Length: 214
Image (cartoon, rainbow, N blue to C red; front, side, top):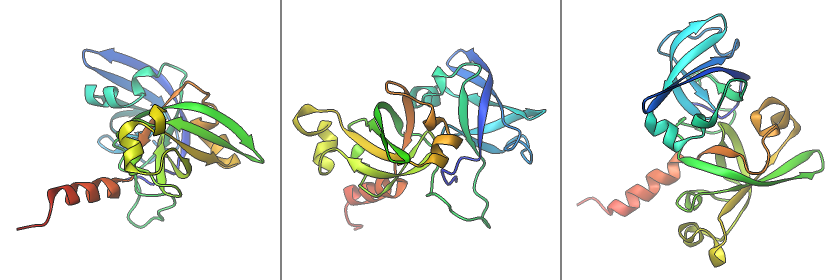
């Protein structure tokens, strides 16, 4: 489990494309300081297994399913990425419960200043917006954020993609700390971000669909 509190801005050193998969090498001295082979590290919100560590860099294999569901496939050498180690059981849950299992990707539609922070609007896949509520939590590129605005009024809007056929979207507000310490301070309109919605909402939906136990 992760918390969505980014520890370090890493840098992609190598992206080696393979048949149906890829191998990433990322520079991250802080997250590799106590890591060993087999540990997990989240890259832009995607939980990956460390396969090797050398001089502040680590490698991880990315399967085809992960490439299809996330934006990791568009990374290139020099790309900055959000890095987070798993939560310790004796640590504080500073953000919210994040699994590192990306549900899909969204596209930044616009960003606008609002005082000392920025408001970012992100286009949501129709099937995901139903799990998001205003003032609830969402992970964007692995960053735990509070939803400050939401298109539509409920699940019906999420299924249709928004009222009147408009694209569904959410808005998040980024404080200066987030702008400075994560990739979200650099990403512009048109760029793709990884999204992970609240897993509790998905479990509740699944249980309700199954009906009462006989």
